Length: 126
Image (cartoon, rainbow, N blue to C red; front, side, top):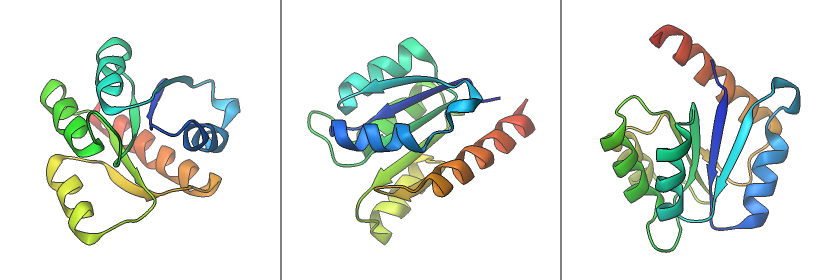
């Protein structure tokens, strides 16, 4: 079951858009971080059910952060977010263990669908 969601993006606007796509009626506890380094720290503190992670950020980019998260928890569910999905980065994210990749800005339907897939994945894993 999804209870905590972490959103890691250096753009406050992108974080706000993503938050607005997450169903408010599900009671999810939302957490945010504004770069990969802060995101990794929040991941350690919060232990989210799912992390939405921007690829292009200062200090530590999303791929580095994904790699660090997976070293801490190989079962972590991480959804990569990017404005420009390139086959090379999609392959790298998959190789590093990303759950999926979505295009920014996301639609409510895409986010809802991803959360439903995560919910099914977590239910099977229990």
